[in-house]
Each structure stands twice: as structure tokens, then as C-alpha cells.
Amino acid sequence: MQSNSQQQLDDWVSGKMTEEQFQPVFAQNWSYDWRLYRDIFIFARDNKIPLIALNVPKEIVVKVSRQGYKALSKEEIKNLPPGTNADLNNTHTEFLKRALKHRHCATAAWR
Image (cartoon, rainbow, N blue to C red):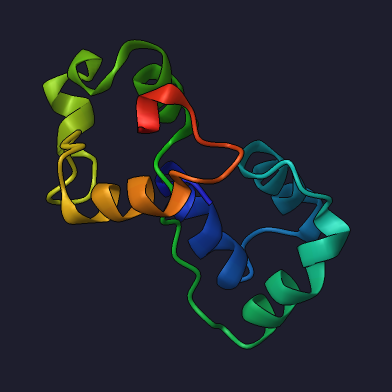
């Protein structure tokens, strides 16, 4: 779930939202069929298990994918997890480059 949906998740777990009210929230966050995840969400609600909205909002993901990280405003960056940046020269990225180098999905940009 996107981080800007945290209040709706809290309302769901606390029983303030019906299933009919929550389904559109789920649909806005995920393209998966509600029926595949319904039992998990019902279990969390019935047992008061907190749910945490960890995903970056779609608008930010789309903006970065189209315009790059530098297109984000200071306010948008402030709302990202601490340490988030666009550094592609890090250990994790280098590992991915090596792992994908010989795969069919590798492109010239990864080589």
C-alpha cells in the first residue's frame, strides 16, 4: 500500500471502514484482485494487527521514471524514506549489474 494510504489502513484495522469502503482504497493501491488478498486483510482487521503502508506514492514513482529523481521537489523528497537518493553507483546496483549481465533481459545500459 502507498504511504499516503496509512490513515485508511489504520481505519480498516480499527474497524472504522467496512469491506465495501476499503475495497476502493485497495484498488487504488494495487492492481491485484481483492479476492486474492481479502483473507489477509480480514485477518489483520479481526485480530487488530497493524498494517503499514510502505510503498512510495504512485505519483512520485511515475515522476521519477519519466523525469528522473532530480525532478522531485524538496517536499516530495522530504516524504521519502531517509537515505533515499538516485545514486546508481552503489554496491547493490553493482551486484544487480553483474547478476543481470548475461541474462536475456540485460540491455546495453546495464553493461
